Length: 144
Image (cartoon, rainbow, N blue to C red; front, side, top):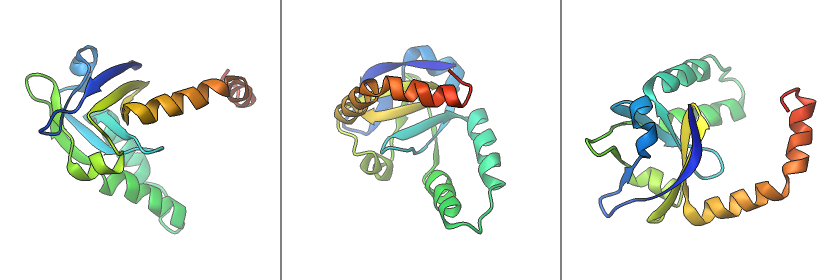
C-alpha cells in the first residue's frame, strides 16, 4: 500500500527517483499515465492491469466514457525502473502535468501521483480548507 507525500525532483534527463520505501512494491516496471487534476498516475503492473481490464469493459457509446478511456490508456506508457529506482518521464506526460524540477510523489493506496510541487501545495491547501465538507460527503457514502 502506498501512502504519504514525498518531495523529489526530476533531473535534466527527465528521470524521477521514486521513493525508496515504494520500490519493492512497485517492481522493476511501472505504468505512468495522465492522471486527474493535472498530475500523473504511476501504477505497479498488477494494479494497472486490473484498472485497464475495468476500463476495457466500459461502454464506448458514451462520449465522456470514451474520453476517460482515451485519457488513461492512450496516455499510458510502461517504463523500467533503473537500479537507483528512477523512471524516465516522457516529455508529453511532463508537459501534461506541467512538471517543473521540483515535484511531490504522493502515495494513494494502489498508485502514486506525481505533482508539480507548487500545484500540489495549492491543491492540498484548498482540500485542507474543505475537510468538513469532504468528510460529510464521505459519510453520506458510508465511508467516513
